[in-house]
Length: 280
Length: 193
Image 1: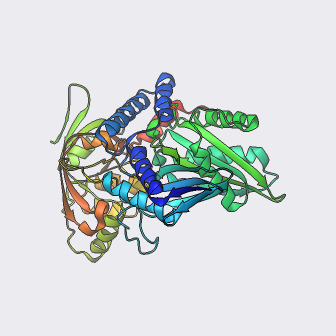
Image 2: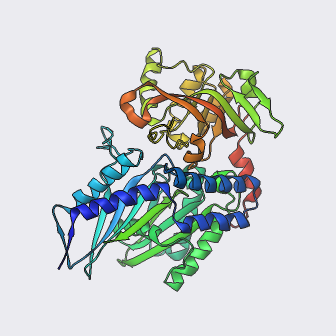
Image 3: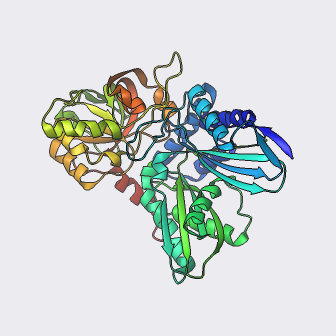
C-alpha cells in the first residue's frame, strides 16, 4: 500500500488548473499549424493566425487563453494499492481548483445551484469521475471545459435498426447545429454504447486522447476519419466565417450495450481545448 | 459620422453610433471599434428586462451604444482587465429586441442569432458584430479601461464600462438583412457534407 497525502493532490490540481488555462497543449498548437496549411478561406486563415497569437500571449503573460476558464472535469485513475491520507480525495481536488482559480486569476464560472444561480466565487466544485485501477499510482486527467461549446453537446438514443448510418448522421448533425456558437474549429468526443450515463461519460473521456493520434481500434479510427472529412466539408470554418477547418478531430469511444439500445453522446469541445494530466 | 474607412480597408467605428453609421455597415466588413462600450451577459440582461417592462430607467443609457457579451477573467495586478472574448450571443436573444427598441445600436458576440433579432436589427437600425471567440487574451490588449457601473454583486457578469481602442471585430448581421455566416459558409460547403 502506497500513501498519497491530500496536500500533494491539491497542489497537483492547482497547478493543472493554471497550466491548462495558460498554455495549450502541443497537440492543439500542431492542429493550428496543420490547418493553416490546408485552409482555403482568407477569413479562416486569419482566425487561425490570431488564435495562435492568442495561445502565445496567454502562455507568456500567464493570462487565460479564453475568459471562460471552464468547469473543471477530473478523470481520476486511482490505483487500488494507493491509500489517500490526510482527508478526502474529492475535497483535495476541490481545494486544488479553489487555489488554482483564485491564485491564477482565472474566472469563477460555477454557480452553487442551477436554480438560484449564485456564483460560488472560486470555481468549485469540479465534476469528478474516479476509476479504480490496478497499481499504486494516482493519475489525474483534468480538463477546463468551456460552457458555450458544452451547451451544444447532444445525446440521442438510436434504435439498433438505425445502426452505423444513424450514428454518422447524428454526429454530422451535431457539428452543423453547433456551428459558430461553439467556437470552431471543434473537437468532438463521441461515446457510443453502454447506457445513458456511460455513453455521456465516454464522450468526455474521449477528448483526452492526443489530437491527431490514431484511435487504437482500427474500425473506430476509420469511422473518425470519415466523420472528420464530412464535418470539414460543411463549410462552417473557423468561427463559422466560412472555410475548410470546422473540426480538428473527432474521437470515439464505445462500450458494450443492451440488445435494444444504441446510445450516442456527443460532447462538443471548442478550440480552447484545455487538458492536462499528472501521475502521482 | 463615426464610421470611416482606413487605408487598409478596415472600417473605424467610434461610439456612440447613429442610424447613418449603422446603415453604412455591411455584413463582412472588418471594423476597429473605439470609444466606450458596455459589457453585459445573461445575469445582467435578466435584471434589465424587468426594468424595461416596467418602463423604469436602466443603470446605463443604451441609446447609440454597443453592448459586448462578455464576462472577463480577473485582471492581474497592474492590468486593466483579464481575458475578454465574446460569449454566445443567442442566449441574449430574448432581451435584444427590447434593448434595440430603446435605441441600442450594436451588440458584439459570437454565433447565430434568431430571426426576431434579425428583424429587430432591420426595424431599429442595429448591427451585430462578431469578435473572435476564444481569443480573449489578444482582445484584452484593446481595452484601455474597465469600470463596473452596475450589478457589482454579479462578479464577472456585472455591467462594465470599457474604453476600447481599435477593438477588432467583423459585421456578422447588418441592418439590411446581410448575414456573414450565410455568405461565408456557402462558399466552402461541399455537396456531400
